[in-house]
Length: 284
Image (cartoon, rainbow, N blue to C red; front, side):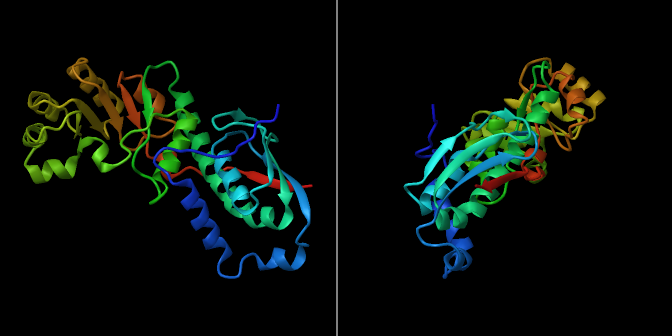
């Protein structure tokens, strides 16, 4: 049975506004002058979006929204779903509609799916690398301005857990807060005195752990610690609060980090450094 996308919903993101702004940026004042000159107004075509590499899919509903914005009556058949891991050569979506409209929307749709799928695909490699350890992969706020909800949606499709969507979405006392506040303990005590809950505090030395716990920290972010130091920190904390390893985590190091017993591992690379996926749109 055909699976048809009639709309897309991503919490915290205004898809219609994003689609309109992106198309306006691409079309400018004069629209797609090439398609208008070369393609008859009533011409129709069928196209298939397909993967050129093994990927984890993300963004297909957004692609559909671009095509429907310019041809509300176009037919769209979803051949894959966001979150699917598919091999190279997989057909992801079939589109049929007004040729001018589909050609005009093509680049915006592909750019979005390629970017989000790239993030989901890289995320899945990190998730797979720590499988069986019990550690949970977290994303970060290292996202493109204006695209955080989309990029964090893509990490979810890859299997990560979202962490801090916004500055008001969680308390995280980092090294600069600690420096200004005069130390780990006064920083944590100030957050607690303000009535804040779920206080996460960054520590980069073993000797900061005891003061952080004494002040009431609810979670410790173990920043830029090597594996032996992480093991010592986890042993010292002894399960009193959850732990999060962060800082310079790479695919070749994440397994060893996970095996130290940390609760979470946060990785900025999955949004900051993911390459775009190779996805094409082939017109029949």
